[in-house]
Image 1 (spheres, rainbow, N blue to C red):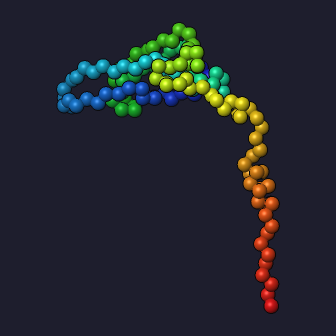
Image 2 (cartoon, helix red, strand yellow; image 1 turned 90 degrees about the vertical axis):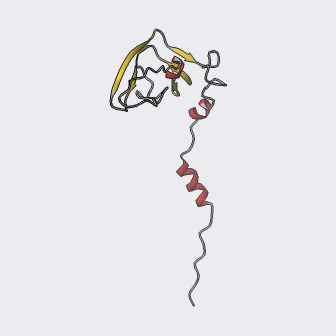
Image 3 (cartoon, rainbow, N blue to C red; image 1 turned 45 degrees about the horizontal axis):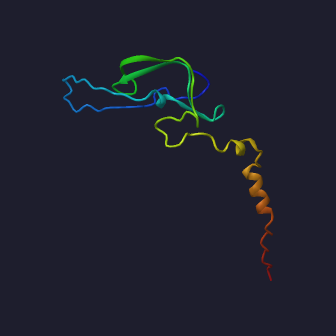
Length: 127
C-alpha cells in the first residue's frame, strides 16, 4: 500500500445468509473498485485508488477468513472533479485547503485574549 491511511478491514459489501448452520449456500457479493479509494487530504485533496495489490476477503467474523482473492490496480486512479466516483453526487474534493494552509492562532490564545478583556468582579468590602 502507499502513503494513504486505509482501514484494511473496511466492509465494502455484505450479505447475511438465512440458511441453516449445516447447509451451504452460494452468495454473490459485488462492489465497484472505486469504493476501495481512500481520501487523500494531504496530497491530492480527493479520493485516490493507489496502484497495487488489494486482498478482498470473505470472513465468518473479523478474525476468520473463509476465502480471499487479490485484486490488482495497474495505475493510480484519482477521483477529482474531472473524474468523480459514480457513488458521489459531487466530486469529494478538499474545499478548505486554503484555510488549512493559513496560520490560525491557537484556540487557547483567542480565549485568553477574550477573557482578559473583561474586568475582574469587584470584591465586596467587609464592614
